[in-house]
Image (cartoon, rainbow, N blue to C red; front, side, top):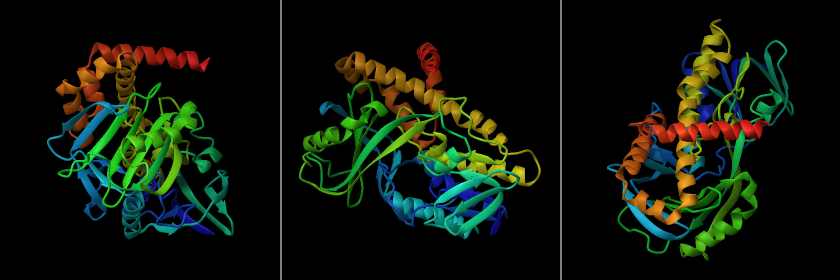
Length: 389
């Protein structure tokens, strides 16, 4: 049986970041993943610049395009375009991007075991995982095993997180009326009760999909088909089509115990305005590694990770949720006036681009909205209380 200081389950951005930082500090780290790598990951593949800036190495080798232009519409109508003063996101294919992060974890000294499904978890004393024909134990365990987080559930963590649904297709083709001058992200709004369809340009493919409340998951395929038709891509070759869920942490959910913690998607660390999670995965991986190193040094346990997450990440998630409540609420009540107001309100776009570039934060921008944010937060708290009874 292998013995380690830390076991990380899941080799995506959160797990790889945790493993890299732990191994770079001298810890013995095992990364376990159920898939054979590199593997396809259902995701739009937009990496905000703020996420890139958290990494201590360049990602140029896996960047397929850089986006500084966004085209907004509402079910194909009332379209307008906004430009950032510089790129706000990198377009990547997640298999290549995630593999790059994992390679850096391995270079730092982390041991990798792929194609390994954890079947059992023992938390009596040291942490012990069991898979088919394999066992390992460690002082600490970081579960970064995705939104379904089977190992997190074994540990009794993350079971009460909110969630939504997404459907994505990777197609070959070019949308009708596409810009030939610069890469453009398309965002199509107006889905009830909230959500959006997207197009993210890649070197050879287009990542196209939709995100909706979980209750609307049954409509996603048909809505994406209609979106493809509007884009002139109805007959485009579809390379892959896949659905996935996105979980959201709204505060208070337990993400860590003495020896086990959740990071990234397993912890519900995606914001409810854009449903983006890569930046939070990397950030939470850094926090998880920091807490694990303290625990290994005899300075407390992994519950300190949740305290740091509450201070550093949860305010962003809360602010993004309030912004989403205001934005989608106005869109639902008055679609045409709100789209017109959005087009001619520079503050909205300078704020969004600044957050994505890492020059501001949702929390900072929400404060600028003052009383509106306070009203949104009060209504969200009241709704959460009603749903909990």
